[in-house]
Image (spheres, rainbow, N blue to C red):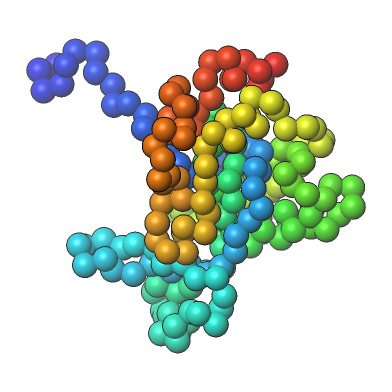
Length: 199
């Protein structure tokens, strides 16, 4: 052991504003209606890429429609606000996987399920091979339940402007920094809220 890092140091987990679908079960509650559109990636001039999003297929440039680079080609997306039960935080979930979209759309159109803001969802991600894209997804709806009061309170205090994504802006950016009370940074529940959410 050397003295490069302090003894006992561990890299901290930095909360993200975006939900990533991990291998296994991903449980969440949808908190907003979805925005939809098309997304592709462009060089930002600094050796990396940034996403561009538009609302309709008519707004996608021809060269993007015909791109051979998978990232440069526009893909249809949904984005909505969720409460992620694993991270205990408010996040944005952006979907581009057609199998997930079709499964949620089927629930929306089913009279017994309807609005997915009225029940929890679990997306199960299963690796089927060695490549990153060798995965299968299944969507499991939980029985409808009222939104937990602690989660509702948290969502009320964490403003999310999803349409900012169309302009390349942060949907969590707020003009009034005092709008989010102390103890709720990064959209996370306080200890008492967490207890209520899981009681």
